[in-house]
Image (tube, rainbow, N blue to C red; front, side):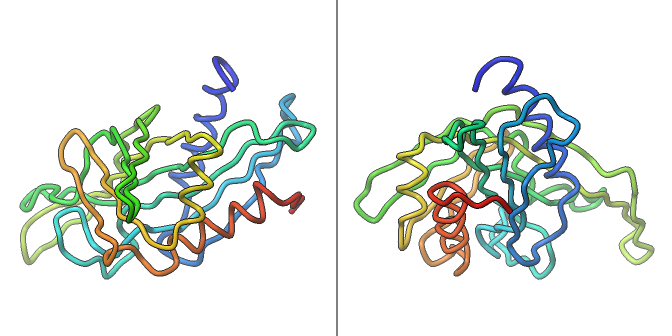
Length: 209
């Protein structure tokens, strides 16, 4: 998928990223193409948080964090066209404490397998959005607002399969402001399970949900 088709697709998935809910149950949905000339089948997902570890090294106790949500686009015949991850860092900025958990513009994701092999993926169409609502804290006398740092990681089908088939791996995410490394022990229990399920059901399978 190239050119205009890719730009339209990326615009769509970024809209879905910004309207997605927090760190709830992993869900997959089929994009409604009723009013579109493009009849490709597109499946997106939500809530695949990679870890409760924060960019700054703390622990998330809310719905914040970095999410790698798998997606796939199939042509009219059901053949896989594009596969990868919609990435979003749900974080905030505080007028007193700054934004220690911000990545900035997300630039690169590196998956590392126990064998030492790496899959390095450059991030496309990075966006950095701020929520309109500002929260005020009378105790700290500070103001804060939500930040959504997003991008799209497009993998080859072979590389996506390697990630989906992994029992354990580590991951580094590089941004223009900060980078974060998630060691094997940091990866959330359901993260790889969700990717494997997505691969089996929506890429290998012929789901029409």
